[in-house]
Picture 1 (cartoon, rainbow, N blue to C red):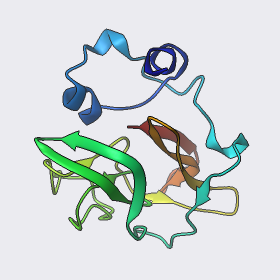
Picture 2: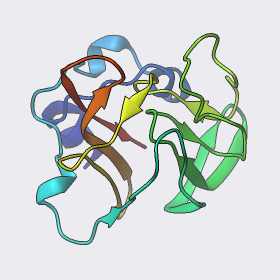
Picture 3: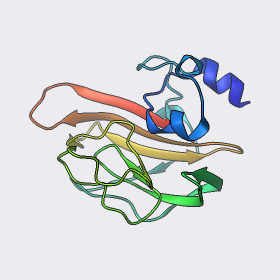
Picture 4: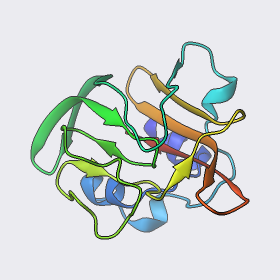
Length: 149
């Protein structure tokens, strides 16, 4: 099933590539063909305030990351996912505050508006977080991206 996801999904992931020891050519980077949790049932929506993070989110399985095993983490409005209580909801993405316990799919100062959604869903053997139509601070364009574990 993971092979099909690699073929069919386009994800913006950097640190995730390192954790799986994958070559860059095994993933497509971009915004086409996202899994798109907005059309899925059984998702969890996070109505988080600006520059904040969720409570602890169960990912549904054990995940090894930098020689540690985790089964939960925190979703930030600013495009990062932390496995610990490390602070990743800062709105200034310079420098990376924590490189051992956090994945940064698209870390920047993101603003939720009425059309924005932050969703997650655990599947049998993978977990997805999606940030949909979040606007970058002081910019007019919206950003949609997903992280797949």
